[in-house]
Image (cartoon, rainbow, N blue to C red; front, side):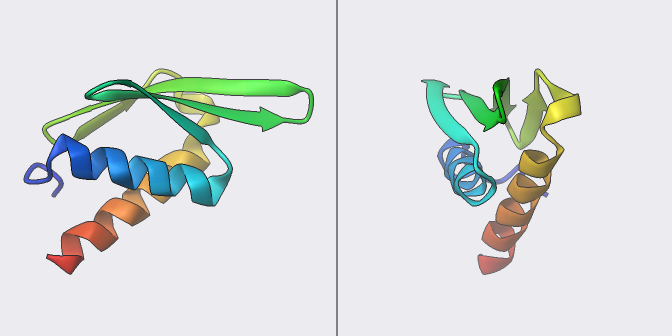
Length: 81
């Protein structure tokens, strides 16, 4: 579904999803970001790598809210075109 999207559009969707769910998104590479979220006294982090519509998280167990929000943003972007 997202294969036709550019990395720039996917990165934008990730940033918007991060804003909505309280994750700080920091650009790391042109196709990878670092996502961080403070949960009480703990900080959760994950890298999010994306290319050709494939998105991979280094910390799957702690990023379900971010993954869901990214899916929502990408779906909105796909249906807008």
